[in-house]
Image 1 (tube, one colour):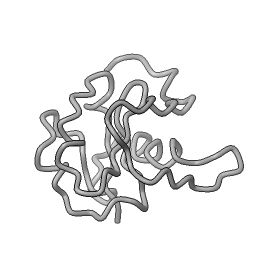
Image 2 (spheres, helix red, strand yellow):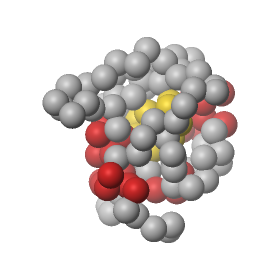
Image 3 (spheres, helix red, strand yellow):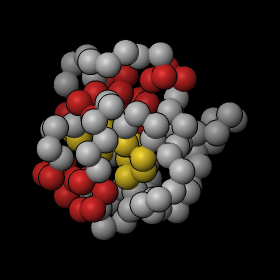
Length: 108
């Protein structure tokens, strides 16, 4: 089970979740934040602090939000499909490129 970020984060990017993460597994993207699927230790700290209620365990994702859960994995995959292990996010790093599918979504 992993934590994922869903649509309420889209174009909000409050970022308070990154301050509570003990392993720096929440990465900034162009339009939202993403949780790395294997770096996350599933402590739930980010879920409790998210001001827009955008963080869920992947088995608790509401109906209609499955696409966003999948994007949390996609953003960390290379063109060959292998999972990239960036080693932890630091404030000031260049944002990750959002998956193409997210770039085509309009604001909710």
